[in-house]
Structures are given as C-alpha cells and as structure tokens.
Length: 330
Image (cartoon, rainbow, N blue to C red):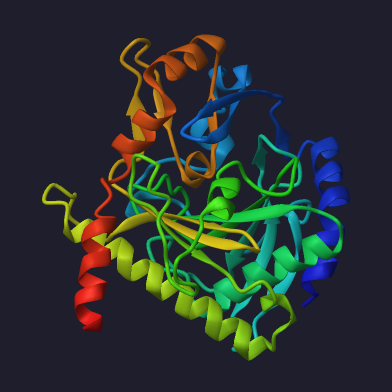
C-alpha cells in the first residue's frame, strides 16, 4: 500500500509511459467555451470518437449496459501499465488506483474497490475519505483535481464495479463550482440548491478547515454530508410520478469545497436536428460536455445545454423540501 501523495506524484509519469507504450489510448480534442445559466461550460470536441471500434462511451468510460451483461473490466489482475498503486482505508477497505485506458484528458485516473461493490450502490464513508485525501494530496502537490461518481442505471455509469473518477482541471475547479461558491448561504452547515439551474441539484459546502481535522472527524463529516444530500435525492425522486422503476440514479461531484448530488432520470439525449446521441454523465453536470463534431456542437448550442441537462435530470422540488424541513423543525 502507498499513500495518496505517492499516488498523485506518480500519475503523470505513469500516464505518459502508458500512452507511449500503447497501453493507454489518448484522444486529442479541442474545447469550446460556452456561457449559459451563469456557467462557462466546456464543450469538448473529439472527432476521433466518430471512428470505430472506439466509441464515445468507451472514451468517456461510460457505456450503458445492464450490470448483469457487463464484464468486470476493473477487476484484478490489473494491467501493470495502468495500475498506479493501492490504498487501504483505516477500516480495512482496499482500493486499486488505475489510469483510465481510454482518456480524453491527461492524468485521468480511477479509484476502484478491490472487493466487488456495485456501481449502483452509494458511496461509503471509506470511499469518501479516500477520495477526499487524494484531492487534498493533489492540492498540496500544486495540482487541481475534482472527483465524480456515476451511480445507477440512468447516471451514465459504465462498469459494474464501483469506481470514482478523478480528472485535472485547467483552473482551480470544474465550471459549475464558481456558481456554488457564489451562493450566499442563509444557514451554514445545511444542504442548498443552485436554484438558477433548470434541474434538481443538492449541494453542501464543506468546512474550510476540514483537511486539518482528525481522520475520524473527516470521515464523520463527509459521511453526514453525503447522507443528507442522498436523502434529498431520494426525496426528489419520490416527487416524480414518472421516475423509472429500480434503484435511484444520481451523479456525485466532489471538490475540496463542495459535494454535489444530482438525481438523474435518463442517461442520454437524442439531438433532434442531427439524430446524434449525446451521452451525459457527471461531467456534464460539472459543466463539461462531449461532442464528436462541429455540427454536433452547433446543434447542442441551438438546443441549449440547459434544456439537455434539465431533461436528463429531474425538476427541482427545493421549495417543497425547504417547507417540509421547516415544518419538521416546528
């Protein structure tokens, strides 16, 4: 086992070596900045995704298949060229850290449970702690990452084994994060919603000094935050009479400042003008989307990002939830 800081210090060289040896596929792309909803979305254009056999779903690591029909590509034994190292939580939970074999961004890596856990299951305290410690290690090393998790059938999830993904950002956060930072909270230490967005979202601002807390305090805080947000996701889903049967689907975004949970109803959108299938996972709700051509980009802009994200998510019932919480407090 190695430390989170050792993982972070090894990622870039491991990525370059795997790419140069052909064990990892890196797809060049260009980024178009698109302002909408108070967010500067990054729409990545990757023409290579039009070629077979690599599909858009392969490259983003998010192909929609039922858990029963999927092979477990993230199980041991690991490809040594992609295996960065192993971590173990204080409770004994073990993880492998692997490079994403089909990468659109350099240094994209995964935190994978060694023992099988379903990608349709919620994040456990140990998952949250290891994710947070990796983000802290990256910041200390002068690197900026955020983490995301696609939970459930309609979230854009791919592999059946639980895996949390980490990608670097050009600035200090994903595009959605400035909107969360700007939120003026009337009550601290409570979930809030970015109400200008056309879909349900539940956000919690983490304590600014959390990284200097004891391991037990970090775990307790992260677990309580996640459960409070998950309760709101379940509540949102229960208010939707047309929600598909089965386990809840949602996306998770984790930075050192906030945790976001976004309930999901569908995993892809067909653009009417082109017929193109636009698969959206947690990255879309972080403000980062992917298209295969300039034509798809223009069609998406015409359709509007807000409409796409709104239709793939759920309508907000934030006002109802706030009223219910106030009633319970009386």
